[in-house]
Image 1 (cartoon, rainbow, N blue to C red):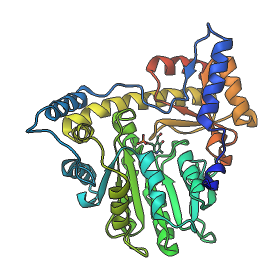
Image 2 (image 1 turned 90 degrees about the vertical axis):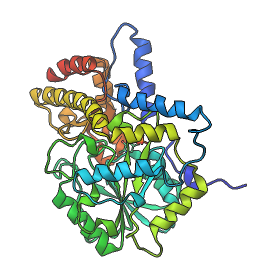
Image 3 (image 1 turned 180 degrees about the vertical axis):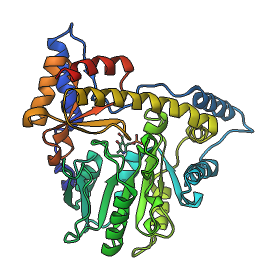
Image 4 (image 1 turned 30 degrees about the vertical axis):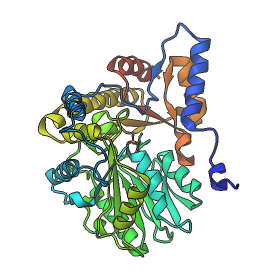
Length: 390
Ligand code: PLP
């Protein structure tokens, strides 16, 4: 038996476990001190009642022979795919329900999409970036190159015509930097993909946090993207579904490489997946109703107010930061050119605040720290008092 040697190339010291370990050590050594956790990547607000009521109603259906549901439609229930297409339509974006594939989350889809591509592909990743793109590319034995984010480009790296890539991951709004590409910038990426015969994997998991009406929520707002892009999205951060699981991927039938990626993805999903739970799909469809959207936007407003408070505190302290205006993450530059992990330790021990070291998201994150706005208002307000006095 031979193992997948590429899987052994992954760094064992996973960012979030190291953060958790250091927090545990701090708490054990300082049992009376309060921990202000701004490192949390999970939501903290409960699911909206309108959503859980729908889950209960769907669960009730499952207990009667006449309304029971077994295996569902392979691509996801039509009522949910229609609801997702309708959600795009509200913004004037054309996405056909037939191109929507429902899943149990964006992370799984991002990993599973690797099944469609040959190992002999060059992957272009923004640096810093959500670690799943890198880890899944390494596990499947692909070459990875980076486009560096920096203070200068606002952590929104742009294509370089002298570099060839086959598959490009874009995440906008970005985790960890909170930066969001403009329509013009996405046009450049689409033009680059078309010129290189490349594919864009666009992760829109945080699109619901965009406030600025000029900013694009989907790659399919860009002409031509339907010939060179797949979009991955999730209800985890939009509607608090991190624990109940529901995402989707749009694979247009207009994508034509050596073969139809839509047909390949359909075949892949039908082979290795049996669909999300009916109860969860009903709850997900409820999110896209008027009352569902009103409820989830209340929670998004809550988190975005947290982001505003964190950012305002940093501004008051004269500390440069990116993000936080159209994303639930604030990306802070460590003062005095401090190293990410050193500053993480400093903030933890001096103020009891836990951030996430930027370097854990890529080398270009060195010297930066990520704050998440998913905590409670109480935690954020207390942390902001410390931050504004830094
Ligand atoms: N994409 C990005 C950029 C994320 O930050 C996350 C979660 O943190 C995900 C995808 C994963 O979403 P899901 O919970 O649907 O797997």
